[in-house]
Length: 490
Image 1 (cartoon, rainbow, N blue to C red):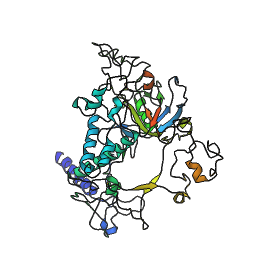
Image 2: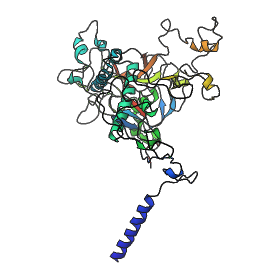
Image 3: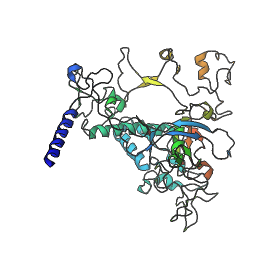
């Protein structure tokens, strides 16, 4: 009997092994994939999106976005509305001084000799620590670079600088993946435009330390080919989170639901209406880093409570139910959105965002992507009206002002040339620097910080600052799109 069972098991294993050698067939045409004899259409095996370094999966869903606390500023710029956020990835912590120093070192090493302005543009503004009636010079000199602050959140970074960091991080992570997969060799001598850029690689414009390309099954090809996005090897772009994504991730409602019912609509990334922990061992400690009252940044000597006079270690406080640290205090954080007071009324209820400027890669008359710029990057331009004339979903590249006033309601209506559509779209909808500080460069930042009162720790609060300015209280973290299933493949 045992021999018969062993025989049947051996036959079963042989059948399984033979069937596993068969190539996948198209359910649409019946043709065999990955077969060079019938054309060689390649289908890469793909199971799951790789989680990039430092990221945490944020399972999406519906939530009530906007005000949950009394609007003490009476700005009425966060009117509650229901929205849906797709699953995405977000940094576990804010970007730290150490992470940003790594970025500065790479920029200086690659571009510093011939393009010192590129390295200078990336430097944080350490002078944000200065106060005309306080002695903060030690932070000016030490906060960014002393190892005691290496795991503290970077500050003095503008929205533009944070966005540039995300672009750089995308390229470094994808370069690391290609080296790990044996496709590229390590290249420590990248210089000027001869550096790895994801867009340039996908466009066939990268000619660096290629170790081994993938096998090309196209019988009309050259035997090998570059990695394509269809292979599932490269990761999507790192970027700043949208305001909706940041607020959704901050609330962490995944740990606060029973089936489809939200047990408690949270103010903060934790349950309750207080900012102290109810855990036995740390009873009464603050859950995040903020300013308790005038002149009280950290408590009394011997019982400092939140343990921080300025910022603090990014892992110092408790994470929320997604595993994200510092989503209420420590530093406020940049998000992608352009600020508008009525964004909540205007934006879509699915993946809401204001700030779209649609672009396309620069190509020559024959449709080929033009050469890279001096920094090794593919060049992009705004989509023209002529290219979008037959579209139903958009007509213009710049949609920042969409539904935010029109030609008739413009403060410049009636002036000479205002009847011209193109010119009318470029007219300011707000009297910037006269009656308003809002323009198309006003970017939203979210969350409380070490200088804030508890009110700003509420996830629904929102503020704005010019994209080229920075403060000692604003940092950032990166996000990434989640491809495929919102919860994972099954």
